[in-house]
Image (cartoon, rainbow, N blue to C red; front, side, top):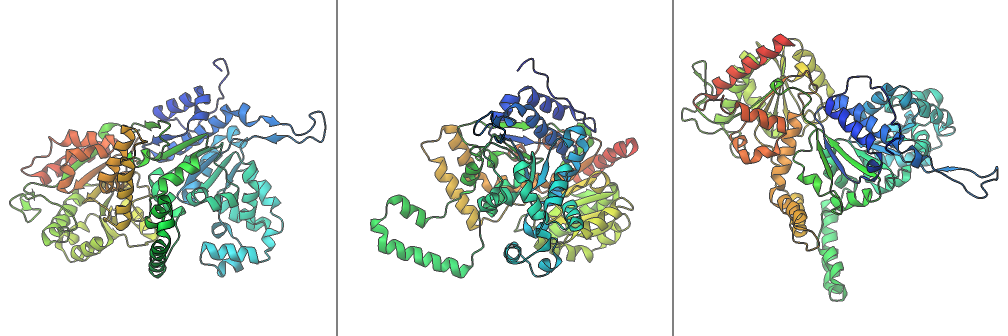
Length: 599
């Protein structure tokens, strides 16, 4: 192996040093790659990292060519009728949405000769792939499409070979499959399903991989293959959703009554294990994931915001230690600025920025964020930021209820009139379309704009705000999730796992921390996802302002990305408690003058 020549290729761009060294390391240790079971990767930059991950998968396949091209002869090896069966190792890349999967297709097309030698397929559902307008007009859900497709004679299904052959010659995204399928009168769903067994790379949405029935129906196999999970910060909820079904409160009540009746009648005759299973609802997301990946060659969890990692560490089978790789930021430290704003006497340019002469802490939690004092403070701070931040700024708040309340207050305020002299104003609405982002983007790059949005909403995940689209991200409050019954059940499950004697002390500690800090971990995962909307490449520059005194808790800073912690530590001595707003504005002005003039 040491003397074996490694495959070579040319990237269509100059790769970041960390990504290239990781790739070279993987190629040099190809046998180790094939045996890895869990590999958590946290990356800082999405666009160029996509292609490097693509290359990782390609190099793994190329490096294990001897294994995957092993031919199993059937019958008499000398017979001309003997048919070779290829033992193919496939790379399955799954992500949350088809738009994210389409990005991989675009990157595969840049691979040149190496990419041309690979068969790339996309696992699509009927609802996304259907090109029969009559069927589409009668369907509104996945179930409708499945039933209608199976019961309808469709001309597009008669001969799928033309599209099947075309899509293996050239990587196609979902839009390509629909357009070419329409031109060739070939159904994209049946054409792509037919190609799955022969594909080298398969792109699939979460549900196609995490739901066993859908996975089997589409012919997807994780056993012996390499599974790459993009946007892995969503994995716990994605696995849970894929294993869940909607059930009405009435049906739940009936089920509860029947279970109680069954236990009363037969409880004395049932083994303890069965009684336990009937009487409790257990959190099964991690068991489902471990079953799914048990026999995979390698599993890669990839995201720009896996921090904090505790929630994901439990997904690894405890028989193996996961490999945790955190890529350093691709940008220089001085291109990013972070600061906490949450206490002190709030004055700016000689005027009160907040009606608080005593310098009380600003806290935007559920009990205080809608008070006049906090609303007034936010209006004034937004106004002052609008005078120093170039182009676009994005402000995230904790809920749509609070966003609507703030919008009502802000639109009646004097601050709004002054903000409009510098920037246009946009508000996200629940279920808002891409039109808000499009309009905001246009204005941000022109006169300047502010977008008010919600943590976990349509603008906080999967949306890039590079360059002038987000020169500042303002995070208002901490988005702690409600202490719902579902969350309580998860904590109860973690507590029970922490007491299991078959786990070692390190494993029990992980579950104990999850039981104690689950709400905090989920909160900071959302915070980090929102922070990550900015700083999208090495030449980008942006600032983040954390508006809430609770962000001053240094014990929680370990839950933030390293580059945010570093910046917070650096600016801690620069912000004076006597007048933090004025200190912040002065620092931001210097930061933007430095980078606007040099970019």
